[in-house]
Image (tube, rainbow, N blue to C red):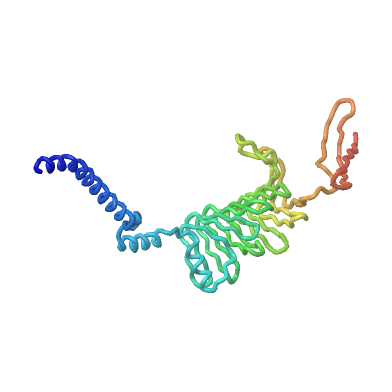
Length: 288
């Protein structure tokens, strides 16, 4: 009997050992599965609720300020038809003041300056420091500008003006634009020449103490001095000149020559413009 029990124990021991190992394996896997099913991974950005609040506050605080104050001004009921970007923008009554790297887009114009004060009621804008205004008609650079952005009338101090349609390049201590494209210039230099990068003066230019110009019309310069490569060659108290963007029939600068056989010869070219694609130049001459 005792011998049979020993034999039975010998047979059952491996079975019990196997069952014990299986039980431990199943219990371990059940715990792991249960733990994985109940565990929710935390949001790594906000492990604690306090961190979430702090992060939101920091995000609000760190939003860029460019144009933000202008948007607030618009919400208060002030209509500002400008797209302004600058380091600092603030609203004072009807005025919008922008400082630091100011750039403005308005209608067909792009404006840059160090400082701008724009009045939404009068539409006048005062621009100071490295001012540049560009539009399809040309470009203006100046130290200070007072201009109506709707009509583009205003005053430009220490300005350089490039007019695309007429090729005029103008430097003036003061320039004023009035209604109907009428311009006034004080202490001004005019030319239509493009100087090479290594040249300091235009092939030709004229200067005057005061000049009035009607765009697509004529100009009149007072105390005018004509220069060739910077050298004064002619002075006249008054000098009328055309300021037209389109070609027009008229006299071209004359030419005078001399030789022993024919003497003095005076050439007077006449330019005839029939249309945009057809023109002719006739040069009558007089011999002495």
